[in-house]
Image (cartoon, rainbow, N blue to C red; front, side, top):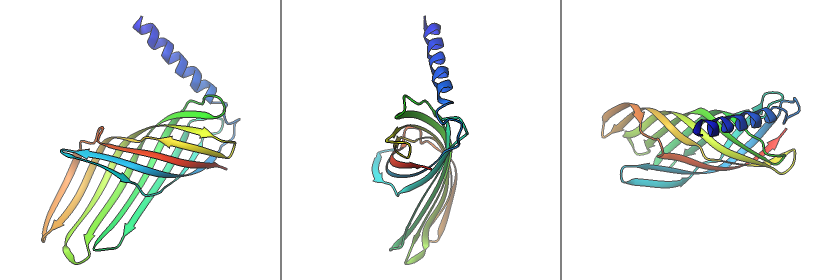
Length: 197
């Protein structure tokens, strides 16, 4: 019985994917997106919710298919007593399963490269630079208002993260490289507007 249910589920998914191939009538389409995000992060004895910086993205499909690729970037810079600069670049390939003309659930798989730099304005002996490489899966759904505008909601989950960092504190340097345990501990919630052109 269990094998039969699995077979039915696979056939249903394959059928949905086959229907999705004709969604764009053989044309390549591009979408410009902008997201607002809320970020959740936890570690031992610590949990935080923060508002993220605006995210800008470009998405495109292969001609005649609903599956799409997406490039995203976000940047933050602040000059104060502590100077902060953050840059993130993300790529994902998204498997889409359109439901009618309005709804398009999807699930994406991709990677993110992030750079973080912190430095103390008054002291060159305090600062940190980190490079974070992440593997991410992104379930999401897009709701189309018309053939130009859509609302996009997705929840990227960080599956794995590799960090290379160098911290300077009171003239001592500390270097680190290795995998961080981020499974279920780094999640983003993103709501965006998409324009198709």
